Image (cartoon, rainbow, N blue to C red; front, side, top):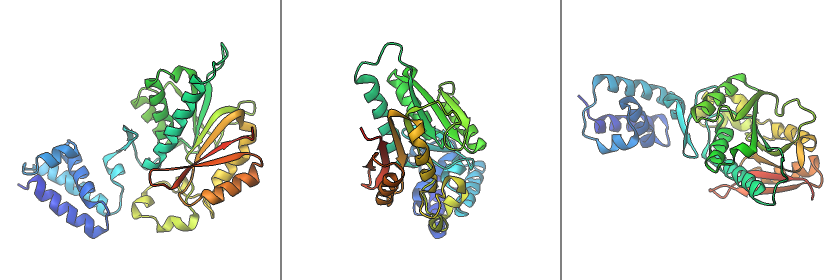
Length: 299
């Protein structure tokens, strides 16, 4: 009977040979899945014997990973902002970079709710997550606002063109006990409500250039192309959303859009062309790369 260490050693070699850049981490996560434990349990009990059933589950998971399938899809879960999200091929796997979008959105909501006194009877802040995918942004924001006892003062809506992605987002919202606090709508960008305006528009839309998609790691090929391909310049879908903002964003509203780390110049130029007079501030992520464009009307 093989031990935890022996299975890990073999798994790491296989993954390195397959081209994995995180072979040790991947092997530990997949063995933890097979053993129904976590990475800590795997590392702490390296000399423990592994039964035939668990070894077979590990081997099957390894076969899928060697073939390129993302670890998150094999495990069925991905951590984001300290929360566990169910993931599968219905939607893009949440990326750590997107946590910045959530942090900025939370700060903006806090600023609005704790700044100048709001008029008595003022409606809740209208916040929309465009292209919700797995629900990582909308659900995390709802959880953070609930912790601050601010969720009752915010009306959250989330849209996606994919009904499958919306269903996954609903499942994640229910899992985090905010399923009744987010309105999910199948829509192409914004809902078809001409008279409604939004105080805060959030979007993590496709922004990978079409010619760059085939060059991405093989694991990305398992994710929905619709959630990745942003057209020839990577900004095709974002451009469409910009065209809707003048009529959709409240007068003092803010739009926060995630962009690629090499798209700051192009994004500013696009905003100048599509939204003359609007400001476009670019926030950097932890890697000091451009990540979120913050748009406001000219004061």
